[in-house]
Length: 318
Image 1 (cartoon, rainbow, N blue to C red):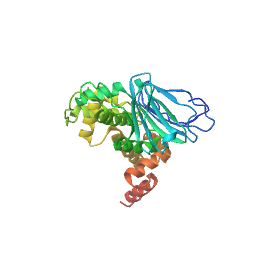
Image 2: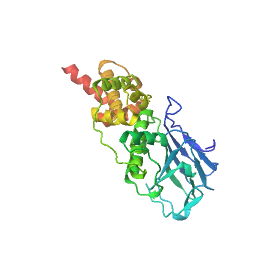
Image 3: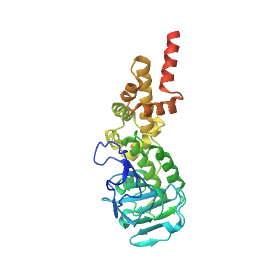
Image 4: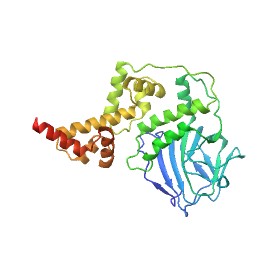
């Protein structure tokens, strides 16, 4: 998008050129829209809104083999929506909220929306999908089924779960986005992939040394800037295998473990120091006090200030 568009500052800090990130772009009636929309060669989530629609169709391109997964957040009349793949117009009907498209970038997908729209687009590199498929025992995935206006409840649900974080100052960490891409990727493989064989089951957890090493790395990177692939490599496992084994061992994902660890660390600081809440938030890996308060209240049930007052009162009386 050019500088006339108004993307919110929502790019997750990147630890490497391959790090995933999210973007929230809000067009207005005066925004100039390019005829080609180029995505990076990594997993990305882009929310694109327009109050007026597009003057012409857009061609979507990726520098690497990848899938484009698009999901509508609002309705569009059939007369205001068209999709092309390989220069062929795909028959479409009314676009209902949370209907999704799954299209291979190799077909150079084009789209046009003639009235107000709100979409979330996922760019999912095929390399990551191939790695997940290999780990799950699917073998090589030769192709993916084209889907347009699919009623996919899984994609709808995971999109609803990510929506509150798009456009916020406390953007999701790369660790959380890595985990999210694995969940989405596994679903895309099972529902849309042309698979060679049935997946094998795997219920094993991490070895004791792997649990210790993973915990050490997460503890050292409380801001979540470490990649899931970095931890998996230290444990001698593929990303997909590590993520599943970690959840088997700990009962939660790496991102959930990290959030819980941040809250526990914050409790320790509040109970043992007179540090201000904003300093506690920063020292515990949160971007700001608002994000800290929101997360703390979600996990503990009370605000950090109230928890601290209760702790001090209780221990003073003791």
